[in-house]
Image (cartoon, rainbow, N blue to C red; front, side, top):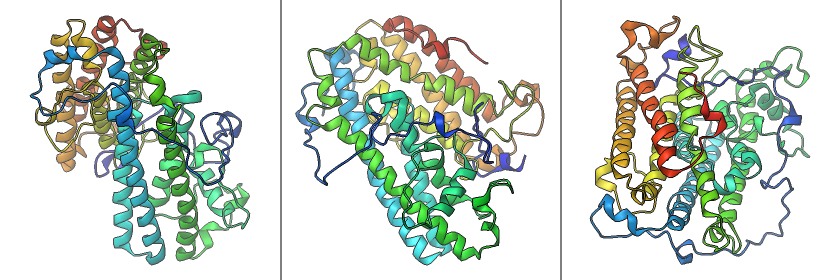
Length: 445
């Protein structure tokens, strides 16, 4: 259980986690497109014409006024959709792009120096970027959701990451004619986590894999150089994929303009948007908490060491916290700043709370917000008390089911998020008149 006693108690899981050897994961099941539409991207180097999001009508935040929940009725349903694109999705992807550029600089710096201090900076830049993406991942909507979330998987493919396949690509990338593989289980932020945080530098393949047979015998500096070469390819690809998403939002006939069109089926689009929020139930609660705590299949009898996300970087609790931030940003209508209390930053913005206000659901908004804030507070407590948190999981069956563990931070976090997702599947869906996705209709807890 040593990995469970990492810096921030990495506890992430998924039933379909792929093994590290060459036998796990089939290329045939992975999308091979680079633009989210099943097509190879060809460009002459010119940028597509884009619109200024501020010039698209609707969805504007009402500035310089005191926040008042009752005034949310001043917005229309279309404002919610346009506003979430203009005020949340696009700015967050733009921030993510800046963070990727910073990581690219840090990769270059470390790879030239191989200095430990530069590696620390590189690790911090990765943590900054993954925090932002975890907020985006909570509502995979718009261009990132096209073709079964293809562009999402191009950026981050956990739990289908395959360390052995990453190692194989590192070796193959030595060839002058090498082109980055399209299969997403060997690239993206998760591949970079492995390459940046894995201090061992030995490969993760079985002895039968030919590409990596001589890897462990290479000098350490040569293995670092080889991994650095592949990291540079990965960060460039991430910048391309995120830019594709931004361009898809902002092109003259792109997704943002489509939301303002009179031809838009507003009800259907709201359903698509609310469907994404059930990520908090099936991924954040179930896969990231219940499975590794031994409270859900396939780990219903014991905690699962193998079912961890961000085990190497030790940022699983941060991932849960940032999922809550992203979820709340969609409700509030602007990117939540985790460094400030919500009360200090609330504004009249067209988030999903508008829809509740227009259906006499302001009391639900107040109660729902309180539950989200409570879950966030528990996550922060765990993060601020890492030594104590590291003692909260033992190698025992059904950790949270044991009476002596019921008040532990992790078990409280499970309970607090469940309180949110229970409301999501009942009052939330009922008031808005939206369907609960089939994948979230059942429950594992």
